[in-house]
Amino acid sequence: MFHDVYKNKTVLITGHTGFKGSWLALWLRELGADVVGYSLDPPSQPNNFEATNLREKITDIRGDIRDLDRLLDTFTRYQPEFVFHLAAQPLVRFSYREPKMTFDANVGGTVNLLEAVRNTSSVKVLVNVTSDKCYADRDRVWGYRESDPLGGPDPYSASKGCAELVFNAYLKSYFSKGGGHDRPIGAASVRAGNVIGGGDWAVDRLVPDCIRSLSRHQPIFLRNPHSVRPWQHVLEALGGYLLLGACLSKNPEKYSGAWNFGPDDAGHLTVLALTDLLIKFWGEGVRVDISDPGSPHEAKLLRLNCDKAHAELSWHNVLSVDTCIRMTVQWYRNYYRQGQDRDLSALCIEQIRDYMNQAAGMHLDLDVEAILSGAVVYS
Image (tube, rainbow, N blue to C red):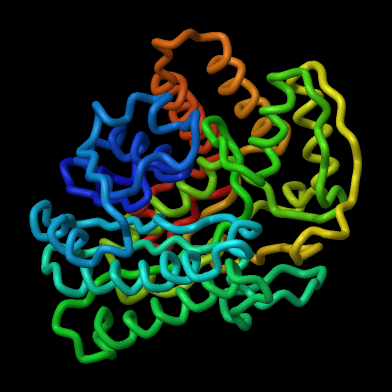
Protein backbone atom coordinates (compact mmCIF):
# COMPACT_ATOMS: atom_id res chain seq x y z
CA MET A 1 0.00 0.00 0.00
CA PHE A 2 1.24 3.47 -0.93
CA HIS A 3 4.33 1.80 -2.49
CA ASP A 4 5.88 1.26 0.97
CA VAL A 5 6.48 5.00 1.30
CA TYR A 6 5.90 4.82 5.07
CA LYS A 7 7.65 1.52 5.74
CA ASN A 8 10.45 1.89 8.32
CA LYS A 9 9.98 5.67 8.35
CA THR A 10 9.55 7.71 11.53
CA VAL A 11 6.16 9.40 11.43
CA LEU A 12 5.14 11.91 14.10
CA ILE A 13 1.45 12.47 14.76
CA THR A 14 0.21 15.29 16.97
CA GLY A 15 -3.15 14.51 18.52
CA HIS A 16 -2.66 10.73 18.37
CA THR A 17 -4.88 10.17 21.42
CA GLY A 18 -7.87 11.64 19.60
CA PHE A 19 -10.37 9.86 17.37
CA LYS A 20 -8.78 10.53 13.97
CA GLY A 21 -5.24 10.50 15.32
CA SER A 22 -5.59 7.07 16.90
CA TRP A 23 -6.98 5.56 13.70
CA LEU A 24 -4.15 7.17 11.72
CA ALA A 25 -1.55 5.77 14.13
CA LEU A 26 -2.98 2.25 13.75
CA TRP A 27 -3.00 2.50 9.96
CA LEU A 28 0.57 3.82 9.79
CA ARG A 29 1.73 1.04 12.10
CA GLU A 30 0.02 -1.43 9.74
CA LEU A 31 2.03 0.17 6.92
CA GLY A 32 5.28 -0.52 8.77
CA ALA A 33 5.98 2.98 10.07
CA ASP A 34 7.64 3.81 13.37
CA VAL A 35 4.94 6.00 14.88
CA VAL A 36 5.64 8.70 17.45
CA GLY A 37 2.60 10.34 19.02
CA TYR A 38 2.59 13.74 20.74
CA SER A 39 -0.63 14.68 22.49
CA LEU A 40 -2.50 15.48 25.65
CA ASP A 41 -4.32 12.70 27.49
CA PRO A 42 -7.27 11.18 25.59
CA PRO A 43 -10.04 13.78 25.28
CA SER A 44 -12.89 11.59 26.51
CA GLN A 45 -13.78 8.50 28.48
CA PRO A 46 -14.04 6.01 26.87
CA ASN A 47 -11.73 6.67 23.89
CA ASN A 48 -10.29 4.86 20.90
CA PHE A 49 -6.69 5.26 22.10
CA GLU A 50 -7.32 3.11 25.17
CA ALA A 51 -9.88 0.84 23.49
CA THR A 52 -7.20 -0.23 20.98
CA ASN A 53 -4.37 -0.42 23.54
CA LEU A 54 -2.43 1.95 21.30
CA ARG A 55 0.02 2.93 24.03
CA GLU A 56 1.69 -0.49 23.66
CA LYS A 57 2.01 -0.21 19.89
CA ILE A 58 3.67 3.18 19.32
CA THR A 59 5.91 5.72 21.05
CA ASP A 60 3.45 7.62 23.22
CA ILE A 61 4.49 11.11 24.36
CA ARG A 62 2.24 13.37 26.40
CA GLY A 63 2.66 17.03 25.60
CA ASP A 64 0.69 20.18 24.86
CA ILE A 65 0.88 21.59 21.34
CA ARG A 66 1.09 25.01 23.03
CA ASP A 67 4.40 23.98 24.69
CA LEU A 68 6.98 24.89 22.04
CA ASP A 69 10.02 23.76 24.03
CA ARG A 70 8.65 20.26 24.66
CA LEU A 71 7.53 19.98 21.04
CA LEU A 72 11.00 21.00 19.78
CA ASP A 73 12.61 18.49 22.14
CA THR A 74 10.41 15.74 20.72
CA PHE A 75 11.29 16.62 17.12
CA THR A 76 15.00 16.78 18.00
CA ARG A 77 14.95 13.42 19.76
CA TYR A 78 13.00 11.41 17.16
CA GLN A 79 13.90 13.21 13.90
CA PRO A 80 10.67 12.40 12.03
CA GLU A 81 10.53 12.29 8.23
CA PHE A 82 6.72 12.63 8.04
CA VAL A 83 4.55 14.82 10.27
CA PHE A 84 0.75 14.70 10.52
CA HIS A 85 -0.62 17.57 12.61
CA LEU A 86 -4.03 16.77 14.10
CA ALA A 87 -3.77 18.24 17.62
CA ALA A 88 -6.49 20.86 18.07
CA GLN A 89 -9.50 22.03 20.03
CA PRO A 90 -12.08 20.44 17.68
CA LEU A 91 -15.52 21.48 18.95
CA VAL A 92 -17.61 24.44 17.78
CA ARG A 93 -19.80 24.79 20.86
CA PHE A 94 -16.85 24.47 23.23
CA SER A 95 -15.12 27.30 21.35
CA TYR A 96 -17.88 29.69 22.43
CA ARG A 97 -17.15 28.85 26.08
CA GLU A 98 -13.35 28.87 25.73
CA PRO A 99 -12.40 31.17 22.83
CA LYS A 100 -8.89 31.96 24.08
CA MET A 101 -8.02 28.31 24.60
CA THR A 102 -9.39 27.56 21.11
CA PHE A 103 -7.26 30.22 19.44
CA ASP A 104 -4.21 29.34 21.54
CA ALA A 105 -4.44 25.67 20.54
CA ASN A 106 -5.57 25.98 16.94
CA VAL A 107 -3.56 29.03 15.88
CA GLY A 108 -0.71 29.23 18.37
CA GLY A 109 -0.34 25.45 18.36
CA THR A 110 -0.08 25.45 14.57
CA VAL A 111 2.61 28.13 14.74
CA ASN A 112 4.55 25.95 17.21
CA LEU A 113 4.22 22.90 14.99
CA LEU A 114 5.39 24.83 11.93
CA GLU A 115 8.35 26.17 13.91
CA ALA A 116 9.30 22.63 14.90
CA VAL A 117 9.11 21.50 11.28
CA ARG A 118 11.12 24.52 10.12
CA ASN A 119 13.88 23.75 12.60
CA THR A 120 14.09 19.98 12.05
CA SER A 121 16.15 18.98 9.03
CA SER A 122 14.81 15.39 8.94
CA VAL A 123 11.25 16.45 8.03
CA LYS A 124 10.40 15.90 4.38
CA VAL A 125 6.59 15.93 4.51
CA LEU A 126 4.00 17.82 6.58
CA VAL A 127 0.26 17.19 6.39
CA ASN A 128 -1.58 19.87 8.39
CA VAL A 129 -5.15 18.89 9.23
CA THR A 130 -7.68 21.69 9.68
CA SER A 131 -11.42 21.49 8.92
CA ASP A 132 -14.13 22.09 6.34
CA LYS A 133 -15.32 24.83 8.71
CA CYS A 134 -12.26 26.94 7.84
CA TYR A 135 -14.25 28.46 4.96
CA ALA A 136 -16.25 31.67 5.35
CA ASP A 137 -19.87 30.60 5.88
CA ARG A 138 -21.93 31.59 2.84
CA ASP A 139 -24.65 28.95 3.29
CA ARG A 140 -24.49 28.10 -0.40
CA VAL A 141 -25.64 24.97 -2.21
CA TRP A 142 -22.40 24.22 -4.08
CA GLY A 143 -19.23 23.02 -2.44
CA TYR A 144 -16.41 25.20 -1.17
CA ARG A 145 -13.22 25.07 -3.21
CA GLU A 146 -9.70 25.33 -1.84
CA SER A 147 -9.40 28.87 -3.20
CA ASP A 148 -12.55 30.19 -1.49
CA PRO A 149 -12.36 32.81 1.30
CA LEU A 150 -11.47 31.59 4.78
CA GLY A 151 -12.96 32.48 8.15
CA GLY A 152 -16.12 32.03 10.15
CA PRO A 153 -18.44 33.70 12.68
CA ASP A 154 -17.62 31.38 15.60
CA PRO A 155 -14.26 31.07 17.40
CA TYR A 156 -13.65 27.53 16.16
CA SER A 157 -14.19 28.31 12.48
CA ALA A 158 -12.22 31.53 12.74
CA SER A 159 -9.35 29.71 14.44
CA LYS A 160 -9.21 27.18 11.61
CA GLY A 161 -9.25 29.94 9.00
CA CYS A 162 -6.41 31.68 10.85
CA ALA A 163 -4.46 28.41 11.04
CA GLU A 164 -4.76 28.08 7.27
CA LEU A 165 -3.33 31.58 6.76
CA VAL A 166 -0.44 30.81 9.10
CA PHE A 167 0.26 27.56 7.27
CA ASN A 168 0.28 29.29 3.89
CA ALA A 169 2.73 31.92 5.16
CA TYR A 170 5.16 29.24 6.32
CA LEU A 171 4.70 27.29 3.08
CA LYS A 172 5.56 30.29 0.94
CA SER A 173 8.27 31.70 3.21
CA TYR A 174 10.12 28.61 4.41
CA PHE A 175 9.02 25.32 2.82
CA SER A 176 9.03 26.04 -0.93
CA LYS A 177 11.74 26.86 -3.44
CA GLY A 178 9.87 30.02 -4.30
CA GLY A 179 10.50 31.26 -0.79
CA GLY A 180 14.23 30.90 -1.25
CA HIS A 181 14.40 27.93 1.11
CA ASP A 182 17.23 25.52 0.38
CA ARG A 183 15.33 22.52 1.77
CA PRO A 184 11.89 22.32 0.14
CA ILE A 185 9.38 20.43 2.25
CA GLY A 186 6.25 18.81 0.88
CA ALA A 187 3.62 20.63 2.93
CA ALA A 188 -0.15 20.44 2.51
CA SER A 189 -3.16 21.58 4.49
CA VAL A 190 -6.16 19.25 4.35
CA ARG A 191 -9.82 20.02 4.95
CA ALA A 192 -12.23 17.14 5.48
CA GLY A 193 -15.94 16.84 6.11
CA ASN A 194 -17.49 15.29 9.20
CA VAL A 195 -15.84 11.92 9.81
CA ILE A 196 -17.57 9.05 11.56
CA GLY A 197 -16.42 5.65 12.75
CA GLY A 198 -15.88 3.54 15.82
CA GLY A 199 -14.13 4.95 18.85
CA ASP A 200 -15.41 8.53 18.86
CA TRP A 201 -16.92 9.61 22.16
CA ALA A 202 -16.55 13.38 21.87
CA VAL A 203 -19.24 15.55 23.41
CA ASP A 204 -21.50 17.51 21.04
CA ARG A 205 -20.84 15.27 18.05
CA LEU A 206 -23.80 13.57 16.43
CA VAL A 207 -22.64 9.95 16.20
CA PRO A 208 -21.13 9.73 19.72
CA ASP A 209 -24.22 11.42 21.17
CA CYS A 210 -26.45 8.93 19.33
CA ILE A 211 -24.36 5.94 20.39
CA ARG A 212 -24.47 6.99 24.04
CA SER A 213 -28.27 7.21 23.85
CA LEU A 214 -28.67 3.95 21.92
CA SER A 215 -26.40 2.00 24.27
CA ARG A 216 -28.43 3.26 27.26
CA HIS A 217 -31.84 2.75 25.57
CA GLN A 218 -32.54 6.48 25.85
CA PRO A 219 -34.19 8.83 23.32
CA ILE A 220 -31.93 10.76 20.93
CA PHE A 221 -32.44 14.52 20.95
CA LEU A 222 -31.33 16.38 17.83
CA ARG A 223 -30.09 19.96 18.10
CA ASN A 224 -30.18 20.94 14.40
CA PRO A 225 -32.05 18.11 12.67
CA HIS A 226 -32.26 19.75 9.24
CA SER A 227 -28.66 20.96 8.93
CA VAL A 228 -26.80 19.32 6.03
CA ARG A 229 -23.28 18.02 6.59
CA PRO A 230 -20.74 16.06 4.51
CA TRP A 231 -20.42 12.64 6.19
CA GLN A 232 -17.71 10.08 5.48
CA HIS A 233 -15.98 7.26 7.32
CA VAL A 234 -12.77 8.23 9.06
CA LEU A 235 -10.82 5.87 6.77
CA GLU A 236 -11.89 7.84 3.69
CA ALA A 237 -10.30 11.04 4.96
CA LEU A 238 -7.23 9.32 6.39
CA GLY A 239 -6.71 7.44 3.12
CA GLY A 240 -6.62 10.80 1.38
CA TYR A 241 -4.13 12.19 3.89
CA LEU A 242 -1.84 9.18 3.54
CA LEU A 243 -2.03 9.24 -0.24
CA LEU A 244 -1.25 12.95 -0.30
CA GLY A 245 1.66 12.46 2.12
CA ALA A 246 3.11 9.79 -0.14
CA CYS A 247 2.80 12.01 -3.20
CA LEU A 248 4.37 14.94 -1.31
CA SER A 249 7.38 12.78 -0.55
CA LYS A 250 7.90 12.16 -4.26
CA ASN A 251 7.05 15.59 -5.67
CA PRO A 252 6.80 18.28 -2.95
CA GLU A 253 6.41 21.24 -5.29
CA LYS A 254 3.49 19.77 -7.21
CA TYR A 255 1.41 18.55 -4.28
CA SER A 256 2.01 21.23 -1.64
CA GLY A 257 -0.93 23.50 -0.80
CA ALA A 258 -4.57 23.12 0.22
CA TRP A 259 -6.73 20.04 -0.42
CA ASN A 260 -10.35 19.09 0.26
CA PHE A 261 -11.32 15.50 1.12
CA GLY A 262 -15.08 15.13 1.34
CA PRO A 263 -17.86 12.74 0.28
CA ASP A 264 -19.79 12.74 -2.96
CA ASP A 265 -23.37 14.00 -3.14
CA ALA A 266 -24.79 10.85 -1.53
CA GLY A 267 -22.73 11.57 1.58
CA HIS A 268 -24.32 14.99 2.17
CA LEU A 269 -27.18 14.23 4.56
CA THR A 270 -29.21 16.06 7.14
CA VAL A 271 -28.59 15.35 10.80
CA LEU A 272 -32.04 13.75 10.87
CA ALA A 273 -31.31 11.38 7.96
CA LEU A 274 -28.00 10.21 9.41
CA THR A 275 -29.62 9.60 12.81
CA ASP A 276 -32.32 7.46 11.24
CA LEU A 277 -29.67 5.34 9.51
CA LEU A 278 -27.82 4.86 12.80
CA ILE A 279 -31.05 3.68 14.47
CA LYS A 280 -31.78 1.37 11.54
CA PHE A 281 -28.43 -0.43 11.71
CA TRP A 282 -28.32 -0.44 15.50
CA GLY A 283 -31.65 -2.26 15.38
CA GLU A 284 -33.61 -0.19 17.87
CA GLY A 285 -33.92 3.32 19.21
CA VAL A 286 -36.06 6.46 19.26
CA ARG A 287 -35.17 9.95 18.10
CA VAL A 288 -36.82 13.20 19.08
CA ASP A 289 -36.64 16.01 16.52
CA ILE A 290 -36.04 19.38 18.06
CA SER A 291 -34.54 22.63 16.91
CA ASP A 292 -32.75 24.56 19.63
CA PRO A 293 -33.04 28.30 18.87
CA GLY A 294 -30.71 28.98 21.78
CA SER A 295 -27.79 27.12 20.20
CA PRO A 296 -24.74 29.10 19.04
CA HIS A 297 -24.46 29.74 15.32
CA GLU A 298 -23.53 26.79 13.15
CA ALA A 299 -23.71 26.66 9.36
CA LYS A 300 -26.97 25.17 8.10
CA LEU A 301 -25.45 23.90 4.86
CA LEU A 302 -21.85 22.80 4.37
CA ARG A 303 -20.44 21.11 1.27
CA LEU A 304 -16.94 20.55 -0.06
CA ASN A 305 -15.83 20.54 -3.68
CA CYS A 306 -13.18 17.82 -4.06
CA ASP A 307 -12.51 18.12 -7.80
CA LYS A 308 -8.83 18.84 -7.13
CA ALA A 309 -8.31 15.59 -5.18
CA HIS A 310 -10.31 13.66 -7.79
CA ALA A 311 -8.32 15.03 -10.72
CA GLU A 312 -4.80 15.28 -9.32
CA LEU A 313 -4.71 12.42 -6.80
CA SER A 314 -7.32 10.09 -8.32
CA TRP A 315 -8.83 10.01 -4.84
CA HIS A 316 -12.51 9.15 -4.46
CA ASN A 317 -14.76 7.86 -1.71
CA VAL A 318 -14.89 4.09 -1.56
CA LEU A 319 -17.67 3.45 0.96
CA SER A 320 -21.40 4.09 0.63
CA VAL A 321 -23.16 5.89 3.46
CA ASP A 322 -24.86 2.63 4.47
CA THR A 323 -21.47 0.88 4.66
CA CYS A 324 -20.04 3.72 6.76
CA ILE A 325 -22.89 3.34 9.25
CA ARG A 326 -22.64 -0.47 9.31
CA MET A 327 -18.90 -0.30 10.04
CA THR A 328 -19.46 2.29 12.74
CA VAL A 329 -22.24 0.32 14.44
CA GLN A 330 -20.19 -2.91 14.18
CA TRP A 331 -17.34 -1.23 16.06
CA TYR A 332 -19.51 0.06 18.90
CA ARG A 333 -21.46 -3.20 19.17
CA ASN A 334 -18.14 -5.05 19.60
CA TYR A 335 -16.99 -2.52 22.16
CA TYR A 336 -20.06 -2.92 24.34
CA ARG A 337 -20.05 -6.74 24.00
CA GLN A 338 -16.47 -7.08 25.23
CA GLY A 339 -15.46 -6.78 28.86
CA GLN A 340 -12.86 -4.73 30.68
CA ASP A 341 -10.01 -6.49 28.86
CA ARG A 342 -11.33 -5.37 25.48
CA ASP A 343 -8.87 -4.54 22.68
CA LEU A 344 -10.51 -3.21 19.53
CA SER A 345 -7.25 -2.88 17.57
CA ALA A 346 -7.87 -6.14 15.68
CA LEU A 347 -11.27 -4.89 14.52
CA CYS A 348 -9.75 -1.55 13.46
CA ILE A 349 -7.08 -3.33 11.43
CA GLU A 350 -9.74 -5.60 9.91
CA GLN A 351 -11.75 -2.55 8.84
CA ILE A 352 -8.62 -0.87 7.44
CA ARG A 353 -7.81 -3.98 5.39
CA ASP A 354 -11.41 -4.33 4.21
CA TYR A 355 -11.32 -0.68 3.13
CA MET A 356 -8.16 -1.25 1.11
CA ASN A 357 -9.67 -4.36 -0.49
CA GLN A 358 -12.78 -2.43 -1.50
CA ALA A 359 -10.58 0.33 -2.92
CA ALA A 360 -8.68 -2.25 -4.96
CA GLY A 361 -11.98 -3.69 -6.20
CA MET A 362 -12.88 -0.24 -7.55
CA HIS A 363 -9.42 0.06 -9.16
CA LEU A 364 -8.73 2.84 -6.66
CA ASP A 365 -5.45 1.28 -5.56
CA LEU A 366 -3.89 4.38 -4.02
CA ASP A 367 -1.04 3.68 -6.41
CA VAL A 368 1.41 6.50 -5.83
CA GLU A 369 3.66 5.74 -8.79
CA ALA A 370 0.69 5.55 -11.18
CA ILE A 371 -0.62 8.88 -9.91
CA LEU A 372 2.76 10.54 -10.28
CA SER A 373 3.07 9.25 -13.83
CA GLY A 374 -0.42 10.45 -14.74
CA ALA A 375 -1.85 6.96 -15.29
CA VAL A 376 -5.56 6.47 -14.62
CA VAL A 377 -6.08 4.42 -11.45
CA TYR A 378 -9.80 4.93 -10.88
CA SER A 379 -12.76 3.67 -12.84
